[in-house]
Length: 336
Image (cartoon, rainbow, N blue to C red; front, side):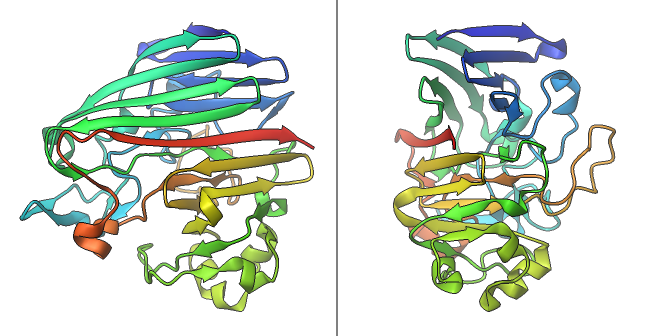
């Protein structure tokens, strides 16, 4: 397998990998995925042709590496190392996705490694405490690998000079429909699918999740049934957000999303997956905004959002000084 590089304007590069039936494209801007095609069907939301314009003004963080902390931190504040840290409040009074100087806004250096059965892109950057307000300066690697089995893997490696928080995610939006219709016809498949309820400010309301497999009496749940309140105990949750924006704890870090054409398997060593169904797209006032509610869904593998204010010193997002961080998530697409 091999990669081709296309240089667009303002330093944005596209790295294109062709694997016969499938093609996948990444960029150094935000170490993000731009496109993933099976035959002629693009299963992720993005823009290859005008990437140098599209991603700079896109508020949805399509395909981006997000951090240093994916998700919300209540009031933009947390305690660590006997110190109270005040972060940028870029989501009302809360802190979201690492703030406006997070990983999604920067150009990464990169190195491409081509092998017979896979291509690996090693993106690297540094994140300074003075840039985002978190303790510690960080060296970060985001490694995207694509292989002959149509599997895209994301690995995160990092170290920090001080004890800090680190909760990186990829904010890709998937849509498995050939016509890019809404995702209501997709199914979530897992033997156990625990959903954490949220309060009105999109913060975890309770650490006692609702098992949707019990709520719907099946391990294969159609999104349309969720959106239309097929489960009585989740009706308020769905109505207040217009869909899903919730952390889940799937069985053994594995779950599948499928429609009649494709099956997308995700496997992760992170404890949670946030599923957001792009419930509101109207705030992006741009000719690039062709998206309507439920145009796509995320599978953000991560620690529970706001875990530092829920669990304190037991939060899984705490990274000790000079301790190597490692996490891996894989997505595999198969055609039915």
